[in-house]
Image (cartoon, rainbow, N blue to C red; front, side):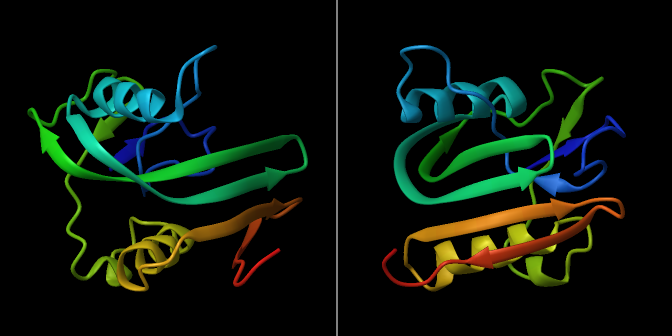
Length: 140
């Protein structure tokens, strides 16, 4: 996982999965591989799409795709140490890890333990930056 070091981020000083934007004409899997390598130095492969999450706030809307990498090579390091740091975070006991946002704990549990596709939504509300998240069950 990575830890954002910029106080402007909602996830400042919290462990979150690496991620970023899809480049023009880039496939989702290619973006995942590139972003993980850029942010952690790790080379991931044998990807499995595990879920989608919509992130919303008053001035922001993004849809994220979550992949499970069945193969990981390389050495963990931070390519952009002024922006973020990279960390191995044990999945066992993650529900007690105060550095991981609650919604990511729930999403990881859903994707890894319930073995079902994740469809979720995270929303921040002003003025207090309260956060709420929902895992959508069943068909839409």
